[in-house]
Image 1 (cartoon, rainbow, N blue to C red):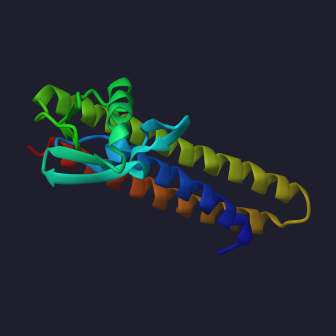
Image 2: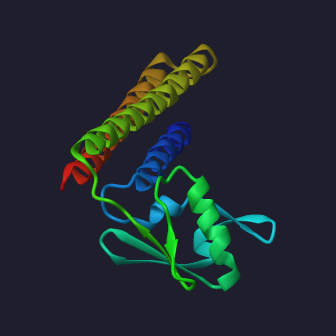
Length: 183
């Protein structure tokens, strides 16, 4: 692959990976420990990911269990979960914190599917913007010391790359929508 194309491949890959990480945080009816990824706990004055202050497990399909390594952290973890946009009230027995995910309603599933589609469209726009930036850069090359044929070839390669990532994003949208709509 041409070095001039590699730069744009990396950028498109990052846009795709960002979408993947974003989708991991969307809960689809079953407990997924990744919904806790963005939540930070006040650990002696330092915002720390929950996974670094306790053991996160999924004992059942709709329950996440957090066992803090220090018992004093239970209140801080509960507070972090309550103030997050997770929408679930934690319960604790003094040793572990449990998050019970309710079954999603049909309406909520449809809302989540719309959200998935919107985030996917945003990722496609990001990929197309990267293509546009690449094409602009190649046109500037054409004004300098590169032949028109070479510029055309670079633009074609960039288009193929764009098509590949758009197809990958579409696949990811379809997969996540299917996961959400499955009861």
